[in-house]
View 1 (cartoon, rainbow over the protein chains, first blue to last red):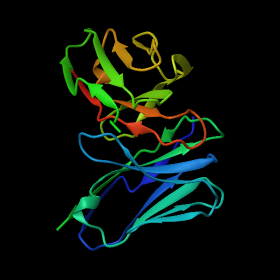
View 2 (spheres, chains in turn brown, yellow):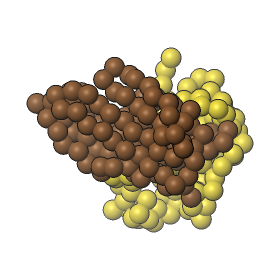
View 3 (tube, chains in turn red, cyan):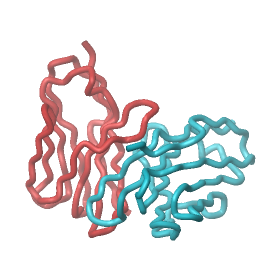
View 4 (cartoon, each protein chain N blue to C red):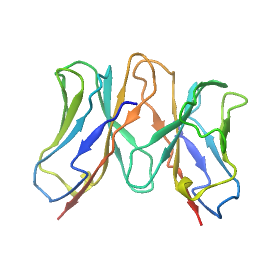
Length: 111
Length: 115
């Protein structure tokens, strides 16, 4: 069973602060996705990274896939209340479509 | 395009009762997934369908859970009998194909509470 551990588990920050969320595993993934989930809704895909060392930016969000494809990070610059939610990483091995989700990081951004 | 539709949104039952959830995927999506998300955790895949065939049900507790997608479109997930530990949100997702990095589109889930 592949495990994806996310840290921190909870994060409460003020608007304008920067933060980084980590996703770590002992397994190698062919690709890794990040999702955001708001209360009462399903997860929504933010990004997919497939190449070791790859960096992708989505406005104030920066995603990086580790060189060995075992870990990933999500950095948010100047967080806003709209960034509040549960952030989930999810890895895929080989060409299979099965996703293994991480343990999640719950982010709260206050004014 | 319309998203993944799930019903009901909420369900409260007593332990040992049975319950069923329904999912209608995005039109044209061949692959359908059922996930269980326990409070404070990430979703866990229960079963994956490719059209009307099961691709992966390795984490489905088959003694009490069953799922079908008879016509390769909508799907139902059933629990019989329910246990307290089944309290969770049940998410349905669909993707165009079951390969590569096709994005999975999630419904808003059914929140199940077992008394």
